[in-house]
Length: 142
Image (cartoon, rainbow, N blue to C red; front, side):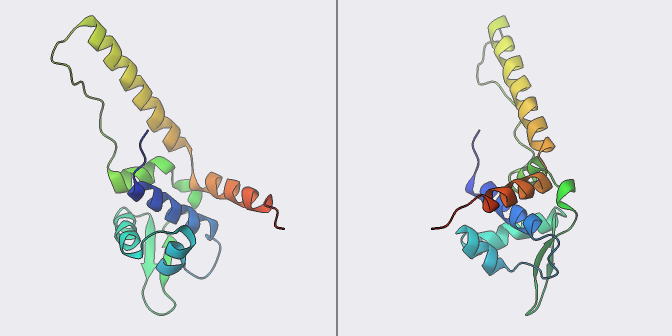
């Protein structure tokens, strides 16, 4: 499975907003970019796509920033990936010959693709935010 930089930054931004979901202050583009090492110009384009997809809302002004448009439990990893990279290409064959072997292989690839989509749809950003909080709590500083 290939994860593009665009998808990774989009998921990092959504996860950051999910972790801050109950915070009354919106997250700034700069804070998200700095925290995750994302180029600001690239991240602003990604956030615009996420806004167009109805996943984030923005507030202008000095106290502005970004927030999730709905609860993290209602946003899946698959939904964010589809918002920035498309719904995922369907499985297609590169072979010119239609044979029982090529059809069998195509069915296997299609099944794997469907399992991948189902797995991504089952992972919510509430689950990921909870896991990230647990991981942060387990860090030891010396």
